[in-house]
Length: 358
Image 1: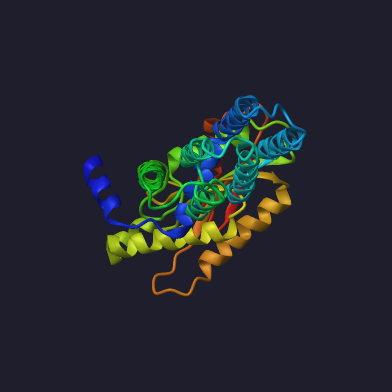
Image 2: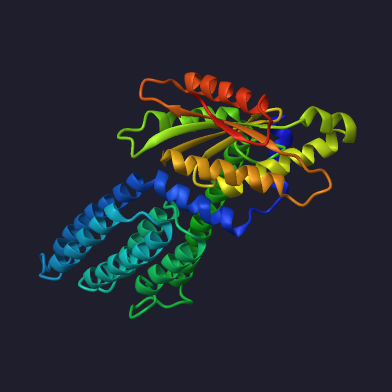
């Protein structure tokens, strides 16, 4: 079964909005790792600075101080960055600063040593970038900035068509291809894992027919709301049942019954969008309302009954609602029992109405 689902996923291209969600998810998951990469890059830059400064016989210069200060500022900004698209811009600025600083350092070395150090700096930066949760444009921009700043053929004594020049071009091409391959293969594997996880979670927590949360999802989310401290206002739990639904199935068939279920789910979603709602099973639905007063619940329950009743359709139905106030000591199951009792009262006093548990 898993293999079948995987094959179906691999056949389809992920839509742009899903890819954007994936990049944001990856950034949130790897936020600490990104900060670690930044701190490691700063440490490597300082070591790089020390080695080059003394190998080149120039010692530490004042130019090192503002660069280290800029790196520290970028790292602090990253701590508070929460959007992947902001990280893309921040990383490009970080790469620009690192490469510019490295270029200034390396220019203090003898001419014959500069190409090797430029290549070493460029490959280190690009390898680090290939592991970060960047968007495509940000990764390509980092590649471009790195090679523009650390190009060994710019203002150097290396000729493009001599032996050392050809070897450098081959190495640059190889490393560019390697980092691109690593970036896109890892990205593709993570993207499909993300899609598979989303798909399996949806199947576990979303009702397939009505496309709203199922009982498992409702019990998890409602229980979380139940134990939320402090409470803003009262909590209420509503149970909903479609009136005479068995008759709809018997007279018109299960296809029409399914259409009715989807229509009721859509009405609940439209009216109760601010709250937790779900299809519990069969023709039963539930809503957990937080931060509301009794009069708010009355207005919402009355509106929902009216929306369902006045729906223009070939197969009109009505609903009955039972509402229970969730007390501080109640468990979710106790609240469900009370709401079910109120629903029973609505059913046996005329239907197409809401009743509060006494």
